[in-house]
Structure formats: C-alpha cells, structure tokens
Length: 82
Image 1 (tube, one colour):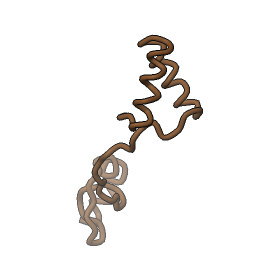
Image 2 (tube, rainbow, N blue to C red):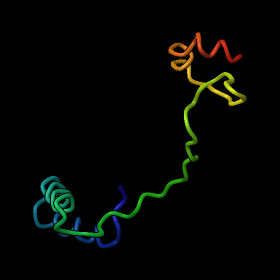
Image 3 (cartoon, helix red, strand yellow):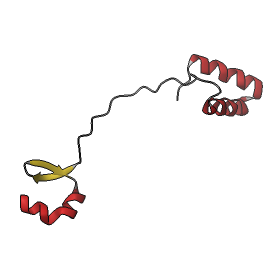
Image 4 (tube, rainbow, N blue to C red):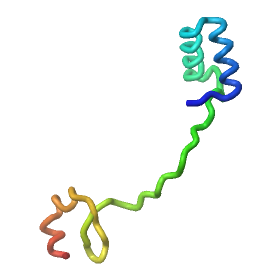
C-alpha cells in the first residue's frame, strides 16, 4: 500500500536510525500495531457490480436461472417447469 507524506517521513527517519531492513520492519510493526496512524494512503479502486441473488441458468416460473449445482440438485424438479 502506498505511503502518505507522513509515512514516508517516518520511514526515512526509522531507516536512518535502525538501518534499512530493521527500520522498515520497525515501521510496519508500529503501523500494524496502531502506534503510528495515517501512514498509508487509501487504495484507489473502482466499484463493484451489485450482486442480485444466485447465478443459475434456465427458467423457473419465468425467472432466469444459471448455476449448474442447482440444476444438478433440483434437476428433476426444474425439468418439470421448463
């Protein structure tokens, strides 16, 4: 996750004080424990499509269905509606 300006400053300070590897380890340990806050910027991302029910194929009572496991389990019942 990208660091904020504050996070970069603290990381640099810890690397100067503890060395590269140990400084980075101390920084992330402190951030994960919650001792230092607002050091990671929020992840940019898109939006997800809303989920509307099950994905089943076929038609039951005029409704479209699309999940093979439902077909396998309810196969004989579903054939009666087609």
